[in-house]
Length: 71
Length: 445
Image 1 (cartoon, helix red, strand yellow):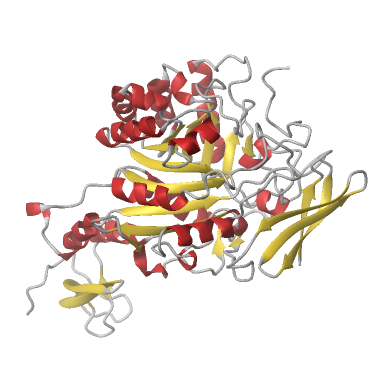
Image 2: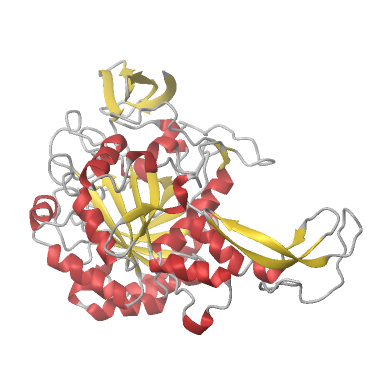
């Protein structure tokens, strides 16, 4: 197990649409420019795609990405 | 060489035109059967025109562009089917009066006697402009908008009409004289102040505005900072007058960040009120502003940092965003790689530009601090706030000598005319050699 911050969907039992595998919590690297950190997201054990929950996508992740978007 | 269209600066007849590239320079050339050939340099020096491009493509699935009706472009404005970009900023003039009598004024403000539109008329026009433009940014302009005592009510009406970002274009005198005004405007919903500030020395203000203003500019900035209004310093650049102060203005802005959110340069165009003959007027082109920035900031701002726009025509502007480290040192934000030069859908370019302006030119957002910092996203936001961002940009307006109709058709900054048409800024303000306006209604005989 890892002790990184975990961002899971508020509800539901999630399957990977492509692989039909149940998603499992796994560490995921987040990279912005030169820096990065690790968080825990639901991830497909087969294909490795992760689920970014809506509250994170439109919340803190959006705020960080706005900082990096130029005209 | 590329082809476009232009006007005769004498009779305003539409003419086929070409852009000639001579070394790193660009010249707009056309011949009027009546008034002869006109050659105007619109680009001078490195980086040259080759590679300076951010093409915009029409939105997929949108109606194919048609042709302008009647007399054609640029005589039937009100955004005709030939226009290639949507509105990102509506410029809305609420008065023709002014409390300065500047020798240079694109709006030729303060010379007419037309009454200000009533508050009710402003409300109706704001709603019509919002309907025509969609969810665009709004700039309240004039004249000097702060001469209206009902300005806070107008700001509130603009918000009510559905403009998400409202900016005030002002010389700042009223903000300096009445520090409570900024708070009243912020309370009404104002987001940002586009503060005319041509330099740091009183000599520059005297030359361009007729009086010393450095103290008032500083007081206006302080008042806006106290009211949590974002401030953009806007310099009209006239060669030989204030192009030697661009570096000093950047340094001033850096020391005042995050209250000051950007510096925007506008090389003077020969329209409205401008001394001398437009044919021989010295013009500062975008590459010359880039060179001045690099030369006067000890290389903190490099010409190579600056990129063409994602919204308006590539030849109309440049910009870059920097982080201001403690002590005022600037470093390019985002590593400089965020804006490529590949084609971008016009609609997406406009969305990016509007969002950037609203975010960068409004007040700096409070970053998480102390106990609010719960994860690495918060730490990233807090670290970014420690080095606030400052945008540096310039826009090259076109006058009757430099007008390139392809650029005008790609314009995203549109004046809401009194008859509710949206008209590209340069066309609205364009005047022929004898002062005849293409669009702007004369307010006095």
